Image 1 (tube, rainbow, N blue to C red):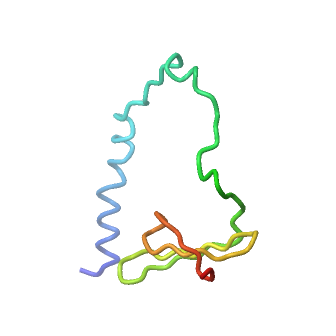
Image 2 (cartoon, helix red, strand yellow):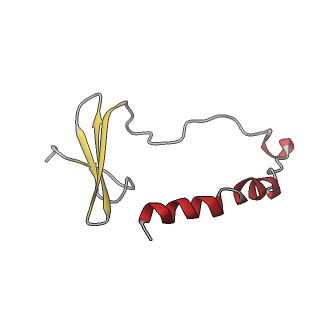
Length: 91
């Protein structure tokens, strides 16, 4: 069986089941009293901030490598999918 035929067959079998699955899902209930005391706040690094000017990513042997260029200067690299970054040109 050709690969395109397999995808078509899977789509014919799966797509009709999607509306039924969505209809049975219940919307989450949020109690306004629980969150009424919360205020908006910034979450993130307090030591540095800035704008991102460019971003590029690629897979390297199963790991996602990300390069980020800051508007203020500097290029940062992550080899763990964005969990941590290190400067590329700083010594």
